[in-house]
Length: 343
Ligand code: NAD
Image (spheres, protein in one colour):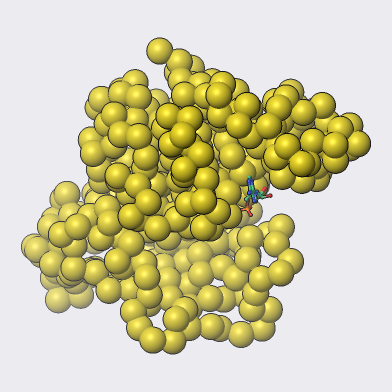
């Protein structure tokens, strides 16, 4: 079976998922919905994508030289599944339209967990998404936390997690967010929402998180601390992370000493839009205290990390692959996700 997929909301996340779908042989990109005929819409159109929009905006697209394939309703009629990548909260408003058309839908992390049947992370709960109609791929920060927790929990057991999230103030293309010159507790009253969000995926984890918004646009960074069920060495932890998909250890000896280095590395490798799908861990940050307490730091490329999860979610919802690890492998091969560097 080949699943016909459409994307509603062709922004930071939507355009990346569109590109990823084009690399799969078990799903087909039917079209994308844009509200404005901006440069991204023009490039997508010139690259051969079918563009759909709101009925009232069709004239604007035609005036910009984009021949529209139809309305968002028409787009849904041609689909088996819609990826909703509209801004936070807008997806919830679309759900009744998707339901009325009997289309499966994947929402993103800006939507609330109770909108869907399953909050999804491929490593943690692929099986729960099998055959489901509505799922949410959790946010970039929650995705990174879930991957790291999955690797540690599977190998050593976890008593509790405490993590601080340094959030990027805006995505690179955004001009209306910040701060420009401040560090902003997010929120001042602790804890942050990320801990409860992780629990929508891993319900039995004891986790408390705090967050600070910083004047950077490239990546988030996490300072992660956990108490493990057993004593470990740094080498044990390195082995566990080396085994885990979608996590990569990068060493200071190769110049990996900041999020800027991660981004430059991705640019040097020629990755489109310098996307980093993996969780890049600062290898030398891994520290063990008192035998079973682990500390580490890693980056999160907010624009890209959820892309492979969306591809796996599609496979699970249509049971194209019932073994999550086979789907992860297929997705990772198609997106050339690294396990080790240099490879
Ligand atoms: P974005 O603003 O970059 O893109 C949203 C797109 O939806 C834009 O192209 C916008 O024009 C379009 N849109 C707006 N209203 C629409 C409507 N009514 N119908 C159809 N399209 C409409 O947003 P984003 O950063 O891609 O975020 C999308 C979702 O992904 C959100 O839930 C967000 O929380 C989540 N997410 C974002 C990031 C990130 O760092 N950017 C990371 C992970 C998850």
